[in-house]
Image 1: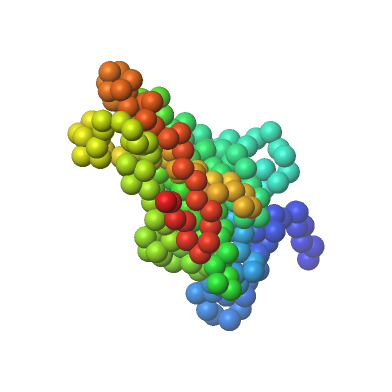
Image 2: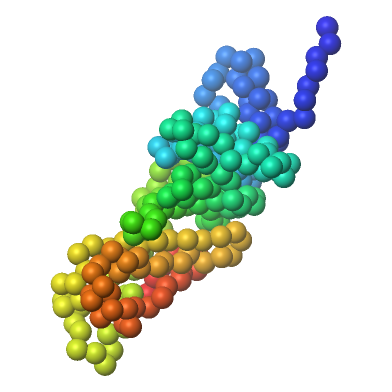
Length: 229
């Protein structure tokens, strides 16, 4: 009998070998992310249990990684809702996905103790809606961690320079009904950047009043935690 095996993406090959081992041993609970040294942003993208990725089947995610690695022109794929998803950047420790025209997902691996943890940034927003980011953290087995342990997010008043003005924090809060903060990052040592997006939703006169006080963005470097001061 002759078998024809096409060239497989390393992640797909690893998953195939895992399935074969599980079948041979009768144990289907093998963890694919148990070894922190082998953890990559691509593997997290393929395996992480995020609801936002439910619209992309695991096989579709692997195909997207294949296409991206081969620099194929077919990078955008149809999701389960009929929209288009596209990988924008993939490195060993970072991945950025355009989930829909108004949402993005960033996956970042961060060194922690003797291993790695995973941070995900899911941002929703566009021209008619202020961008806002849901930040989550996972261990090397992709189990959820408490966000507050790894992120001290900035408060609303941290985005405004009130020195020498008539504004108090209490008065500022009267103008701002909610906080919309966009978090972004990148590969390697790129810091976490926070940008206050609420002003774009406010009336023109309020935006004109507060814009001169606004700090464009805040950044925090990783040191076992992101702490905005």
